[in-house]
Image (cartoon, rainbow, N blue to C red; front, side, top):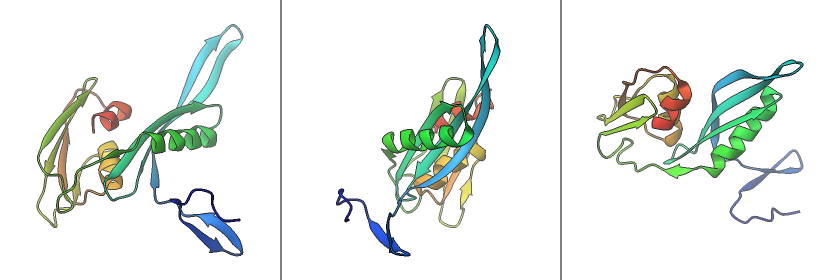
Length: 153
């Protein structure tokens, strides 16, 4: 059977029709969280995932579940629903920007060709999956919270 959605590309692998996924996913963080109930603590997992097509589209997803795999899968689905388009000019950004989310503050500056990505962990994930190849960044805020740093980016 041919795919119902004409925009989704498919390919034939070993006799089966498989959808090509144009998005690459990267798990930034998985935390164990707990809720205190009458009988003790209930443990769950929270996953922070970034997806992007390395061509100007990137999305962030956050989800909780009882297992790591299901939390990650749910976060990927949410990230694909929250895609934004990043303006690119010659594999970098058009101008310097400063953003903040909570107490996290991130500065992104365009860099000349050949510089590559100069960025810390969570910011690097967002920038690389957005398709930016030459950029300089700095996390300034007084937080090492990966969620806030990703959201600020």
